[in-house]
Image 1: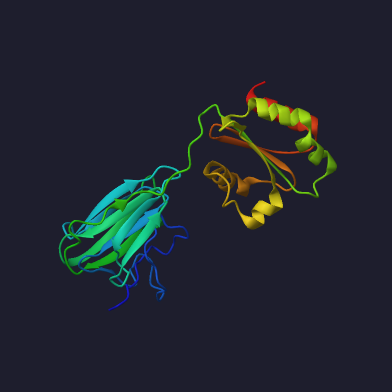
Image 2: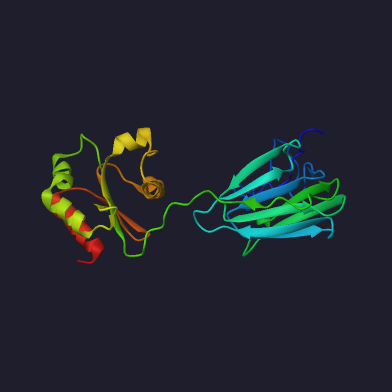
Amino acid sequence: MTMLLSLCLLLLLDDPALVFPSPAVTPQPQDVAPGPIRIRPEEWLLVSGKRQCLLIAIPEGVISVSEQQLQAGETAVYRGRFAGGNGQITTRRISDPWIYSIEAQAPGNVTLVVVPYGFTDPSERQIVQLVVDGSGPNPPPGPGPSPPQPPQPAEADLRVLLLVDQDAPPAALQAVNSQAVRQWLDANCVQDAGRAEWRLWDRSAIESDGLDSAPPIWQKLWQDVKADLGDGPQAVIVRGTDATVVPIESQPQLLQALKQARGQ
């Protein structure tokens, strides 16, 4: 066969603990694999998910399983021949916190039972059938270097992002352009290359055009907070790694929010 046959998950789960390759399959009874995942010589199976799991192979000795945990914001890069990849050498980038690599040890058939730690409902289990054609890659491919990570702010560093549109209410525009607010930001935000770390951005422009030209720390900040932003002008006040989002209503209100975040 030139394609990976399906893996099998317990179909009671809408959001399984681990994500396996899953081409479309004919519906099967619960807890029964519709078809095995085939691991050919020089291939390995890589799966990941949001939860730590116990992987039990029955019988033992046909496969080995290793676990890797990533920290928040990390990405692991793997390059090799993966099960389901038609024998091609490919690169995979994974940012899920839990990664499991499954390698062949000997030919045979394996039932793999996946049990999330702390599970309370039997339906949270996954059962996957594996067919191993031969021994795995020797040595197996390992994770490559992670992509460069944005610099991490110090705990006490203060950064402020002011987001407005040109059609924002006059009081909000007056607030972000007021001398009192700008002087406070210049005096209290952390300095980088002689510049205070606060920014005033046109919200509609960055939502449509992106931030490819912005420094990495501001790109990461935007990615972290954009889903939590409300409508209208907003101030994102960051103290170290903690971000607070407040609406911009007036100059006194904005200045009070800034001072409160600074502990003044």
